[in-house]
Length: 296
Image (cartoon, rainbow, N blue to C red; front, side, top):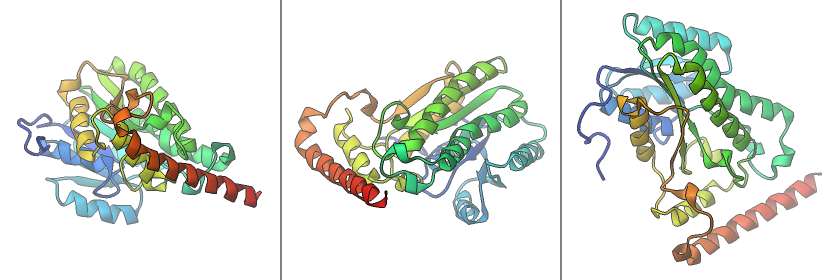
């Protein structure tokens, strides 16, 4: 398989982009940042706080001329400042693309039944994981004077029930709806809005979902291509959407999951390997139910 760096051409040469959501070198946002940088993009990477900022700074040092900007997407003041700083960073040149890879939930509510979701966490998860895309888009659109691309990240839990994904599934469903509405609102400015629905990958964010290792193993066994999704897969797909290759694509949810989203049942040739994974997950869910019962 051709690596991102070895792929011919510079699809983003002369382009400028903001990538939000890099947390470490396993982040989907980092896979996209590496791909964009390898294809000539000039990047700004945002981070929410100093602790994450230190990790992002170490990664940014691996890229050519990446700029770090602090922004908590839950703060309108931070978002306003981010837009101002981007305008100062590239005063005579337009912003060409934005990658929104931001989501959050209390990990204690990514275990057990969705029925137990608290009002406070519902509000926070929807605000940070969904509304933030709209808040960002409203502020960056004036900077995208030549049009461009806004890309966000979703997951199959937006479409189907995934054990323990809970309120994040609801937030991602709302995010995908937002993609469609924003695509219509911004289309007359030649700004495209899309999402990548990636297969399960072990990241800092996904590690908060109880049983994620089972979901990852299950997807790898039952996807048509018989392997798990990687951040490099996501990076390559993102390149096609944020570069000029994707000029005719907007309002889409692009699945990058080795085809897992089309599967309607356990793959027959993987049934023997899949069974133990299902048993382990079932036992974990039973333990969660028992624990919930003892707490009530």
